[in-house]
Length: 68
Image 1: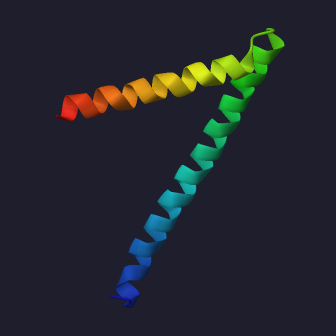
Image 2: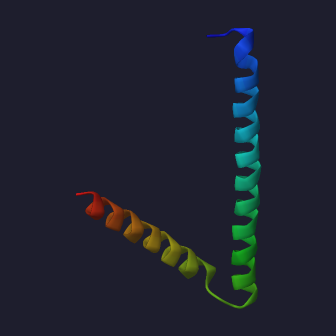
Image 3: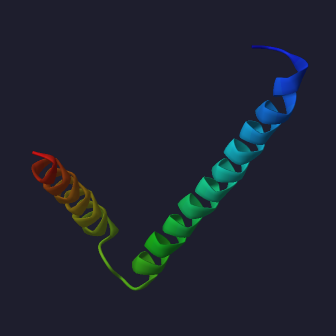
């Protein structure tokens, strides 16, 4: 499966992965910026992170219950 015909397909996958990686990096920076804004607003960032973590757990639990 390593023929010349696959070069275009490989390039397409590489391009898509690179694009998604760039988008992910931008999202990570956006999240950091939001936490910085929260800190500037004198909010407890540790507590905020805990809330986010708990809500993510709750969401995962709801999903697993919906699947069963």
